[in-house]
Length: 159
Picture (cartoon, rainbow, N blue to C red):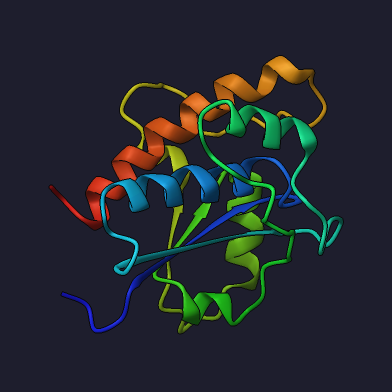
């Protein structure tokens, strides 16, 4: 067992839709599995648009319908230190991955992954950004996030 908890950082562009949804869903799964002491979660954006702001109200509402509380989360921007503080940095799409690779220090210890690498029930490779769509866009995004969260949890703490 690791000497410190496994730390997972979820990253999207603004840190108000996909990455806080992923943080909330994954943290809820971790807690239900009794692994809260072993796995820590956070989320961030590659851009600085929403630092200190709550997640999008549509994301909060969609997650709440699934028993996940995002209301306490606040946006922040990815920092170079994150590449040393986290074991996994999980990007929602290729654009976020490219942004992360561009700022990652050469000696970074974090493993970079696209989130849907861990999904079992979709052929998609990117979690689509629901921000500019209607309310309905958040449900399929949460389906993808739940699927990938199960796979990621199994990767970190196989049952």
